[in-house]
Amino acid sequence: MYIVQIASECAPVVKAGGLGDVVYGLSRELEIRGHTIEIILPKYDCMRYDQIWGLHIAYENLMVPWYDGAIRCTVHCGWVHGRLCFFIEPHSDDQFFNRGCYYGAVDDHLRFAFFSKASLEFLQQTNKRPDIIHCHDWQTGLVPVMLFEIYKYHGMEYQRVCYTIHNFKHQGIAGTNILWATGLNNEPYYFQYDRLQDNFNPFALNFMKGGIVYSNFVTTVSPHHAWEAHYGEFGYGLGHTLNLHQHKFGGILNGIDYEVWNPEIDRFIPAQYTIDDLETKLKNKKALRERLWLSHEDKPLICYIGRLDDQKGVHLVHHAIYYALHRNAQFVLLGSATEPGLNNWFWHEKNFLNENPDVHLELGFNEELSHLIYAGADMIVVPSNYEPCGLTQMISLKYGTVPIVRGVGGLVNTVFDRDYDQFHKPEQRNGYVFYQTDQQALESAIDRAIGLWHVYPEEFRKLVKQGMEYDYSWNHPGTDYLQIYEHIRHR
Ligand code: ADP
Image 1 (spheres, rainbow, N blue to C red):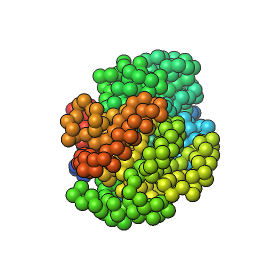
Image 2 (tube, rainbow, N blue to C red):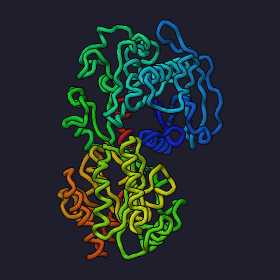
Image 3 (cartoon, protein in one colour):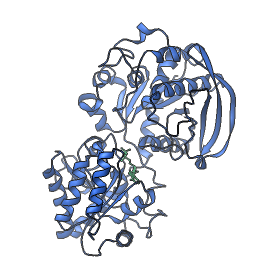
Image 4 (tube, rainbow, N blue to C red):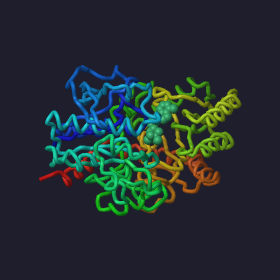
């Protein structure tokens, strides 16, 4: 099959979060299986150019209709760790992608509406006719709208769209000018409840809703999150739209890249280890303690790795630090906060705990250190309020670090409580799960984990191994996406 991904991120060249990892990881998996994959991205000024091989101009003078005129673009082409990527560079005073950041500009909706239009225009003008166009998140929600309302009548009637939603919180809310800019024009037609009109603001249009309504299939990043978005509060207002389109909506768990996240070959950790050689994992615990000036005593080491924000249950993360100390365990935190209040709070805690030999808070983003923490810790806490998929628990499992998670979103699909899970046999369970958002719920799960570690070390080791046996690579999701593509492709 010939598949084109249109996205605002692709790791490692453009990565702000999990979206970038998925676009890269899925493309790699599909290519290994013999499919042809191309990725279209904006040419941001601030992306990691050192991660692109052989960057050259692929197409010049791509004229993209925009309002009453057109914007001239150059399309560059290069390989990102083996994946063929096209980068669209518009030449206009708007400087759409020369902002020193990927997101966060006041005209983001115009920037990404333009990118969506330019991507389609590029396919159309270069006679590229993929079987499947796979687009992602609100930034490319208008791709299927324009494909089926405009480009279908210009030689693209056989293309089909799969649309993946990584985060329902950001939907791309805009005014009518977007319709004029993109050539959709017919305002009364699009401003209807069953098309692009936002479900709450009748004067705004919603890109993500357009993506849901017009795509041939819609996915989100875990089966449980699909349920939450459809029936619960996590659809952020799009639950009814998902309900209307439920026949073409489902959840597919993200994968992780075992080339990068694998204790057997990880070059960032001092001692590589396998499931049969868990003694070696202890060497990484020792190295981690040495690096962070922690004491070497016979205690479990609990960690947290992730953004520090409300979505991640930051108050419970904070509580976990003090509760671990209270239970005579050690705690390592690696996290960054973008919100100034939270940032100050954690800096204050860091200074306060600075002399304590049982705790270390590392505030900032440090990929290399994260590998050592995954390898060196005994347990990880993931007390999220909201977690569409979550990668940290899947990485931890691979490294034999037992996850203690709140039962939301993708965490429900990946971590199964050792003591209480009703759907998995004891030998299939791999961690601890709590459900409420209060401190007692977290404490009781941590108690159970620490208790097992101290009192039944052999049982704890068994749990570690059961976790390491899970396969959360791209293998399964790759098959699932291919089934969807087969299902929707034109025959
Ligand atoms: P998000 O909601 O941020 O996408 P995920 O769990 O899906 O959360 O993915 C988080 C990814 O980012 C993981 O690979 C994790 O190891 C990494 N990560 C998060 N915070 C940090 C940090 N401060 N330093 C290094 N890596 C981090």
